[in-house]
Length: 416
Image 1 (cartoon, rainbow, N blue to C red):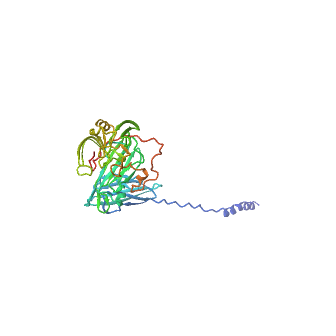
Image 2: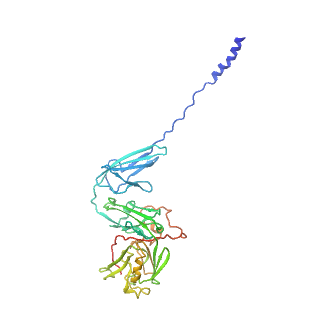
Image 3: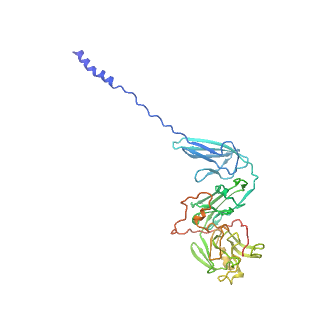
């Protein structure tokens, strides 16, 4: 009986062992996270690379986290990214027939990194004729709220080459107030402005990085030019031919009315929005050889408004006409006392608006960036302009500012 009891008691244990056999659970396969893919331009071992070359990293599965450029002497080359991150731009033009090595690192979301290097050699100094560029924005000045960044070109830039040139024109503002570039039809000038007048206290930094830039098939850029200046309070002049009066406004408030004599019918003053371009305590108008000219006259307190020779200036010889009739050769004549006072109020970059004269201001005859609507202005850009970049609603208070600085003189010094 004891034996039977033991056997019976043990049987369930044997049966239980046959029915509970288990295999270990399979471990899930580890997910392999790929490293970022990265390619660079200029390609490795490239030769005859332009001095205006930029580093273009194309990354998939990550973002650029480091860029290092050195020349063949081991000197570090500073570079800054474009706003959209599409390229790193050396802060100074590269040197001819030098070898540069670029190391770029991209980092993925997982933290994995990829580093690629490329080595390239720049071209020899070009023998092609240069396009002469002039930056009408001086360093360490105070400008008016209407001051456009203006660059002139000789010879003018062909339409097909404007996008390449425009990509090498850089403007930064603090605080941020983005704008757009717009070309004059003949390509002789390009203007940069914001949708609204500059805000007072804004600092504007400009770089025209054109040295060594291929421009079309036959030309090359001449130089790298840069300047940083600021915007002050607002001064604006409104000149009405119907009343023969100039209204001088500072920060939106009328501070003086000045009688004027404008251009007579044979040499009319232009109507439109101009910007003060230069200021001269003394200058000479020499119009010999020009249509409707032939005179030489010394003037005081002259402020240029157009390349064609329209100025505001002291004209003691026409005081009896000022406020009554137009007798000038296109300039705005005011008394010597008023001209002297006005020189102490205005600075380069102030807006001057003329209304009611016989002719309209021609695009490009001066810094005419404000002589058109924003919608028309952006049509002159060779590159896309963000659709959300537009003027503030009309109900917004106007920007306030003051101007300053003297740019490089323009091509004509005539007036009258």
